[in-house]
Image (cartoon, rainbow, N blue to C red; front, side):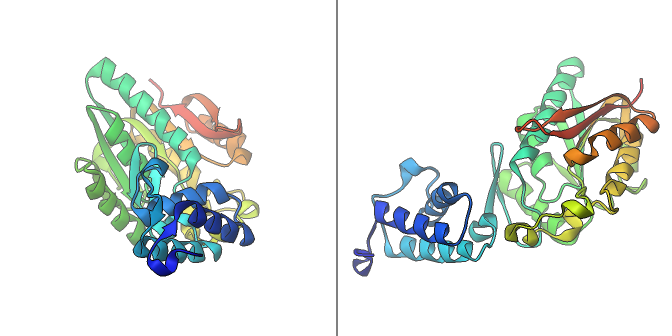
Length: 293
């Protein structure tokens, strides 16, 4: 690593070193992780802002970050940040790391909120099991004239959601500490909500992730509470039906293996226009259902 002794490390040399180390560690996303670690170490917002040579401080940060990532620590825990649609959010151990497919779910909620605003001038959205606050904050940032409430039971995610609210400047998002499945939670909104959006714990017992990074996510944010993972989602469907105004829309992320079961459950409790939307790879991942008129 010539150049480091003088406090400088050429960008091309640094990038090659990071790619090699991450590849040796078995990281699948070597190129993407190298880009993010370089931007993080150099406090740059894009590859175009990277310096031609890293300072000693930047070099030390990159080496430290690559070492941690090589131990299969999630990239978002190494950098302390994660990206969700237009937002840069804080990340921390003990809180579920947002996934790219959930951006699609947030997009559905934003589109529906904008449609409601166009019809009525305002919209109300509730995000159940908000975790880091990603969905709620994205809706607040992208859907004007929309009032957003977000519910989280666990203390660490709730604290992070509060921090992300301050970081993004979405101060009008109402954060509620409570159990999203309990009727008392947000009961003052019963029958008044246009959209309930949720990425609840839903993973079935036989689909629990095995990759080392996923083990950093808290079990309570993954496991759906029963062998098939539908216990918690089913309770969320019932709670959503009570919260929604007539014609209001429920949007829920789930496992592809649960698509038919959750459609059947939504229909059984009285919801209408029930369907499942695909993710970016065509897998059926998102329940859509409306409260009856």
